[in-house]
Length: 331
Image (tube, rainbow, N blue to C red):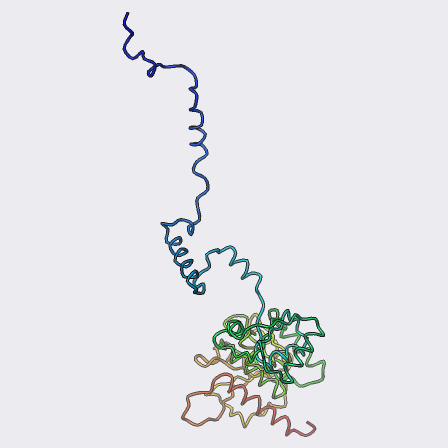
């Protein structure tokens, strides 16, 4: 008797699970696993960028652009919140001021003058690690505009004073306040120069606003030639409100402006508690700060230059006030 059509072994239909088929459903449920990162996908733009950077590094180049491992880079940025002070005067002044430095870097075969010897002695006494590095490494640490003179110091972020605390300390010391406030000065080198001039002419501190202002960075440290270790810098959350508070406590606010109604040599408030306010080169003093000033003072100059930069203008004003105070009887 002939077999029915389709009754062969290969076409037999059995009820229930068939051997070897159970895994297909599990694999479908499991999916294809976690999605690879963009930089790990060879066809993705980030993957092509990663491959190109790896080839560049393998050929001896330095990494450039964004790091491949963004999480690692974020952790490094979060942990590396130190500043690098460079230059022999700046480093020595920072060490003398007992700023809690974390490492002193000295170039190989550095010229050993008295300043370097004192740095090494202070670092050894305070148990600050002294690391010998190559000059190219110091160049990298110092940045494009840095001049390290063979030494660099890692210090924590600058700790700003409070304007009110700064004023109270001056009064407690029995001194006549001579302060500088900066309105929109965003160049850290100008800030460093002003800190240095404040120290040179008997000032007791500098006040900067929290926003739209340069801070005490490594560039400011360098330009101040170490004066940032001696002259406190206070940060005001609102500069106009801070100046008004100073006025309530007997401090006269003098704004510097080329169109001022009082010439600096004719200033009559030099012997009083004063804060000299300097604006930015481009914008000058802001409107609110100008309205807060007791006097707007101009510095006589020839008609050739349009204006003095913030650092020079503040230095001239500080010098004039210092000379007028020195000429006062009993000073």
